[in-house]
Length: 417
Image 1 (tube, rainbow, N blue to C red):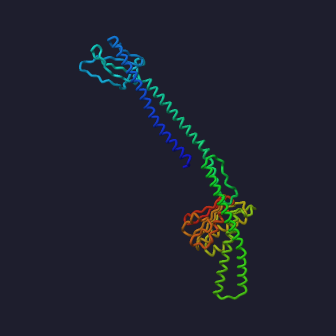
Image 2: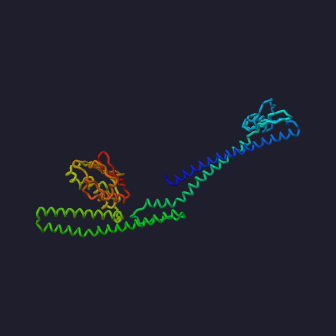
């Protein structure tokens, strides 16, 4: 979940809880105030009745007014009446319906005769006022929530834009790319510090990579001459001297080690050139079906020695590639399928307009997720662990995808165009 979405969710939920809680309190307070005001009006009506009795020595006429009703009841000897307020129903005779009302009950002696007095007022106006206040409160709450959502969506989104800009550049960051990380101007201190830190980090990483690349390139180039001299001297030594069996085995081991070191050096040079786009950009139309058939003919003898059974289903497919790289790519895939196979194993090659699939039997365990990293190889492998890394870089250079899967006991390498 994104930080902005999480922040919006927490803010809105907290706002709803607070507004609902305060709205309930607000409603209760308003209701209490209006009820208290209604009670004071009832007490004021009682005071007017008392004043009338003191002046005229009798009760005023009972009446049923628009929103008020006064009823007198002669109390029997021994009757008692508790003075108090309570909610009740009020009959609105003009509209012939019952409405919520507030009743005040009290007693009064008139010339020594006790009377019970019941004063009832309609609460419709008060309830309507409370309801109106509640609707206004809900309306204001909804407007506040909508405003808050719009602010979070647009204003906060704009404030967070520098962060997402830097984040995107970090995701797209490539050591071999010459483009620098560009910080978006912002007045947020934290984002400015983040921009400076990312720019400084990318600069240090690129500088370290450049120094390491230069060291690798120089070391690889410098190794070419000594390796060539060693090979030349070994050839001369083999041709001019007669050796014992033990000496011959030692020289053969040296020759194989030098040959292996030479191939390793050439592979590292090729990887460095691929990663830095130093391979010539000349491309030409290549009939992939013809290239695959040519490579299969070259590996036919080796497959026959191992007893490997080949099945193929090839359709015409033309790619625009550097022929040298295309040759290396197909050669690596086939040599990898043969080298890591067992005697009497199987190899299947399928080509269509969308993909090239090379599958082979071999080790019954699936390769690691690091199969396309340089120098990766399993314990049983005798290779240098650079073939798949080179193939992956070649595919990446032309926008192809090289994927690996293990299914039904077969290692499947899939090149998706």
